[in-house]
Image (cartoon, rainbow, N blue to C red; front, side, top):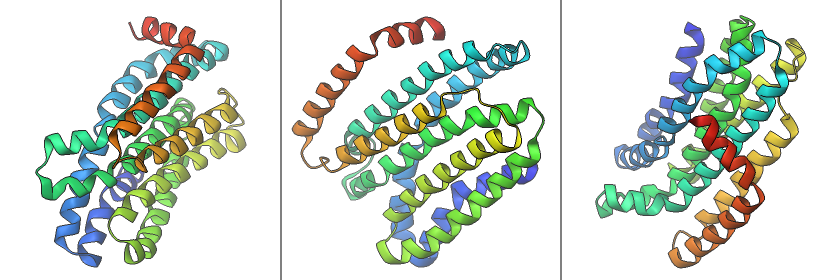
Length: 249
């Protein structure tokens, strides 16, 4: 787990160092400001993950995969709801917390927040690997993702500037999700979750969230669209929302 931890530090921190060397300290400051806001979601996802893990281990030890599948789907849906809502309000959060020269950093927030959502999803597969004590898989996957992320940074920061680093971060975490998914299916030969639904949910969340970023300069349309979308989704998933609240209690 030590190489895994080091690789995750590289994946999370290499952006700022490469932006400093390629674009300068000013852009690095803007990126760090947006990155800090984007990772606020970690407070929620880490809290849910810590609460979930003991319950998951108990159910998997009892071979109760159906209970895991059902409850986890609700948690992933909630993560998508919260992440999309966070992307919608990101410009206002940035404007409240930072002075006007830093408002440009709002464009970093969506991709970083969506990268956090990818972490939230891949933790499901990491929990399986930990349960079966396959920590070498975790380390290898993390190192691969960190190297790919560094390579993407080198290519795209030079072309598109510091904002590209946020999207390479999203790509790095999405690649890590794919690697852990493949590891559990091919090496562990486990199928606990509704994987296809997970990927459809995640991709739809990313698409809708990027759509909201195109409306960052039109706040009324952005909020009106978000309210309509969330009302529709809440109506469709009302039973899951009630069960999520009960489960978290």
